Amino acid sequence: MLGANGAGKTTTVKILSTLIGADAGDVRVAGHDLAREPDAVRAAIGVTGQFSAVDKLLTLMTVTATVQGTAISIAMDMTEGIIARFRTMHIARVSVLTGHVLGSVIQAVFSLAIVIGVALLVGFRPTAGLGAWLATAGFLVVVTFALVWLSVALGQVSKSVETASNLPMPLVLLPFLGSGFVPTDSMPAGLRWFAEYQPFTPIIETLRGLLMGKPIGNNAWIALVWCAVIALGGYLWSKCLFNRESSH
Image 1 (tube, helix red, strand yellow):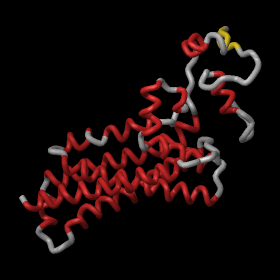
Image 2: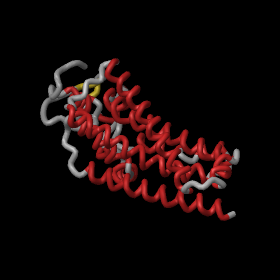
Image 3: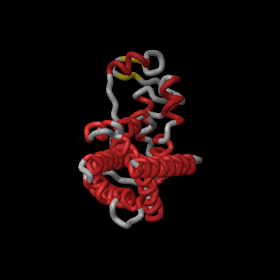
C-alpha cells in the first residue's frame, strides 16, 4: 500500500485486520462483514507490519544478538582461564569487564548502522529529522549499554559456553511480546498486562516516536528508568560475581 505520510495507510490496515474499529461505513473482507464477523476475517487473512519489523524489532534484535555474543565471550574467557590471568595483573578488576562492555557497545553500533542502512536501501522512509536521528542513536547506545552489562553477569554465572548462549535468550524473545507488531490493547488481557509493563514496550514506543514522528509521551522516561535499573543491576551483579571468583 503506497501513499504519503499521514494519508492513513497504517490506520486502514489496522481497520481491515480488525485491530481497531472503523468510525463509520461498511467493510467486507474475504466475503465477511468486518464489524459482525471479525473472527472469520482474522481466520481468512494474515497481516505483518513492514515498518514494525524493520525499524524497531530488527534494531532491537541486532542489540540482543550482540549481547548474547557478549555472554558467550565472557563464558569462554572464564572457562579458558583468560580472566584468571588478568586477575594476576596489577589492573583494576572491573576493567576486564568494562573492556568487554565497551567492545560490545562498539560492535552493536556498527551492526545497527549496517541494519539501518540496509533498511533505508530497501525502502524504509522514517520522518525523523537530524535531531531525532541523533536522539535515536543515543537512545540505542543507552539500551545496548544496559543490556550488555546484564549479559556480562549472565556470562559469568554460566557454567559453560552452551549455558551462556541460552541464558540471554529471553532478551531475544521479549521484543516480540511487546508492541512491535500489534498494539497492546488488542492483546488478550493477561498478555496485554505483561506487554504493557515489560521493559521492551516503552523502548519500542520511544523508537517508534523518534523515527516516525509520533507522540512519545512518558515512554522515553519509562524506558530510560528501565535501562538505568538494568544497567546498575547488571553492573553490581557482575562486580559481585567477579569479586567472588577472585576470592576463591
